[in-house]
Length: 101
Length: 198
Image 1: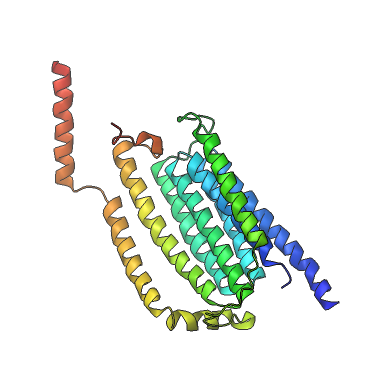
Image 2: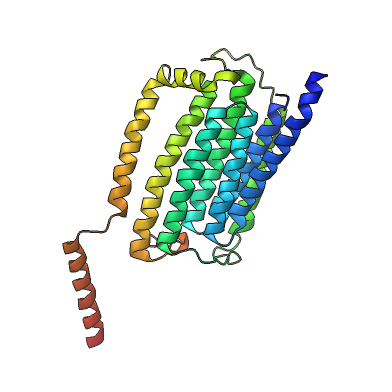
């Protein structure tokens, strides 16, 4: 494997940036969740790259746990979206402004 | 000689995976329709799996496809269809004036800093806490050994986490009990009658 680690790390940083932009710009709760998944995947890519470069399988084990946490997070998050949709009939986060003074 | 012969396919695979990852990510953010966002997310996840294979994390590549593309994105699509929000959203609309350029600017600064850090960092700092060496021919074995010895407690904790997530999802997504629902409807009717009277 002759690809320098920095190349993968730069792709990871760009992916994280795109995901962060999506969370800040989009207003649909489901798309915001997908953008959070993008950021998690950017972290996974960096972890696997470091595991390869440092010859330490601990990085891959961490990716395994990130996958589990992502699955749990999506399950609960989508449950919350469904519950909100039942009462508000909207998945757009701008419609949730009850706490506004 | 052999090294240079191996470099060209490696570079091609890297370019392909990077293109799929970043193209899919842009598609997720820029698609008007949430269904298209989910499909672009699948493209990104497959690109990540390709990068995993290229870096000899074969087991994680398979898990990435099965868990992410097979389960999580399907869950997304299921909820999108279930809620019926699969219609186009007006992306151009900007409810908070100036929020979007500010967000893009802040993200650009952070990403630029990250790229500078990633590109300049010397990562061969002499790792002293190597848990187990990566083994390209047997990454499942190395990963399994580490998960069931060093990270055993974390592994058991994930079992608890998944149980909590399942129970939480069922509680959040189920309909309220019928009696409560009827009381709510009666309240609504009273309000409607009251509004008619006034």
